Image (cartoon, rainbow, N blue to C red; front, side):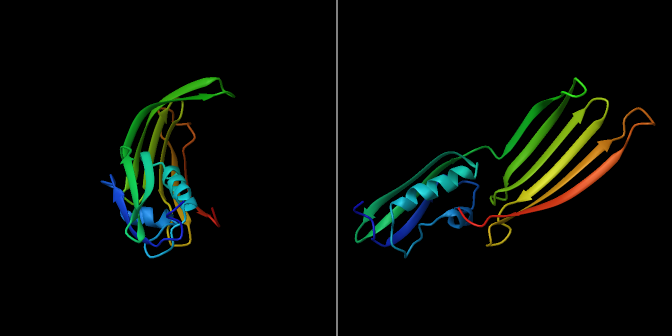
Length: 172
């Protein structure tokens, strides 16, 4: 590519109405002031796509004087999702119904809040929150709560559980 080894002058972000630029910058190899490498365009496109925040992603580079201008253009997915749920338990041969809701890209920082409620012989409610890349060390934090809600029977097992998980990503 004729742009290889030229200096990246600027990176423009288009279509990110909610997603903050820090989310893009965190995922990018291409940075202003550094030499441009065309192979990094594919890497950056792949990282943005893997976030799951965008319905469409386009990353392009154009010559700009002695340097290169990189343009990141996205079309964001809706930040909320709600849907009915049907679960099938093969061991008990039973179907349960419920509802789930998700808030994605909370505060434009790719944080997620998920809730789910399923009813049947037991009522189960779950709530989870995740914050990817808690620090600059590519670490995510997830918190899950699960509760079997009281039903109509006094003998029904009632339980509550909570958990915290963390995942550290070492490389690409």
